[in-house]
Length: 148
Image 1: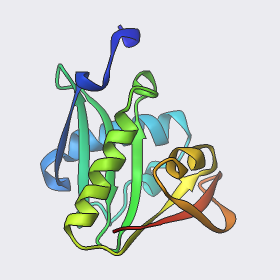
Image 2: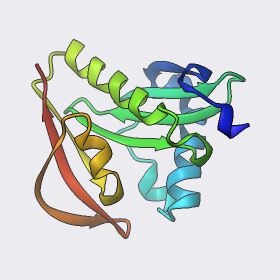
Image 3: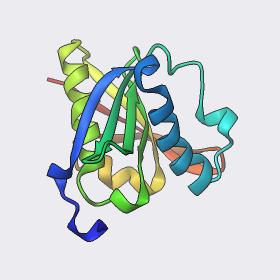
Image 4: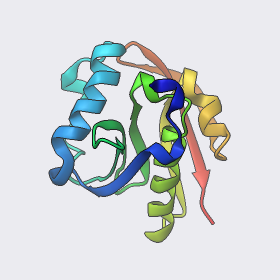
């Protein structure tokens, strides 16, 4: 049924790590640990408890996407299950995180984008800064966006 999924087929929930920890962990581990080979010890860190999280579930309540923003304005842990990529889930997560940052009065946000996702973030107004770097064996770029 992946071909009939649409932007209206999912629901975003905002909140603290403690509320949706198991669902957020499931999505992130499926994408980063299982699919990309990132060690679980690097994926789950001590920043989760103090961050604002977005959880996306399909119409049946199954977790399909996740993202977070740390108090310093760093967006990260953006993950969408493979079957849902290209369906607007990642864009919805990013928009919700940017909205949260604006409500909190952040002047700018930044992130460490996987090289393969740079164009995705550029479409939302992020700009690359500095040279690329490697984390967990994956090439990344520092990107930032000034907020109005």
